[in-house]
Image (cartoon, rainbow, N blue to C red; front, side, top):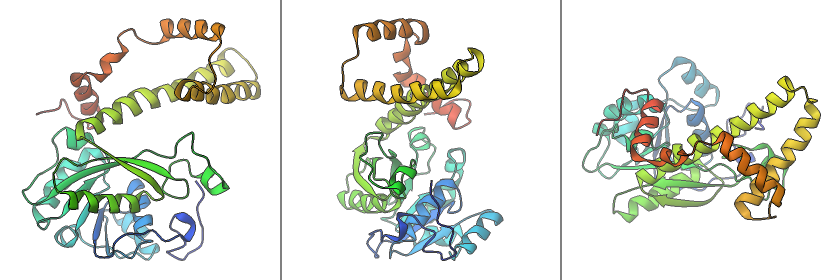
Length: 305
């Protein structure tokens, strides 16, 4: 990711100085504003004309915000005043933080989390009059037509490369969904589209599809490549040259049907599936298994419903 190293607070934000649109009548609070995700969403909010309350508990985090020229607000004050409160804190403390924040929030306000685990597990404090939504970035697609060095450098999204977002809101108030969409487009900008699903569907996508399946396979590709280099003894440059190109063609063939796999390749793929993939791999999509993996992610013994 490319970083701007000048000292001006605005120039330290993403999108290379481009203005992010957000209705200035919508006030936003970011709890955990100096953390990994908190910094990302705060950087984009800092480019808007909306009032923003930056909340950070740690002293080093407060110092980082001060260095960026961002005034720190106490959590209680931010919760009472913001139209949208974003909890950019680790999943394992979302329940505790929401218990502190939600009772203070004004009627009609929105609590926005960035990952569905705690929401699906029922860990978030609820209150009549306070809406809840969750929005998770899709990250720039491998098929994105990038045209600039900045877009190529932005692998995570939220700086220069456009991405999509999947969000969940199960209330029936369309004005709340509209407000959430505006904030989501701002914090993850540049955004192509926001797709709305249920909380359970978002949890099935993240972690089941994305982390349990996709990220695991991504790391497995690295493990297999390392084995070829370190254990089999094939020269690293040769391994990378052949593997990196074939990973891309494998993905575009499988996901987009760009080119058909050859008959010989299909037979090799069947051999690999038999030796590597568990026959009951679809069990990770069972509700019970989703609860197991979410409990692990949230550092719980089990999910209580």
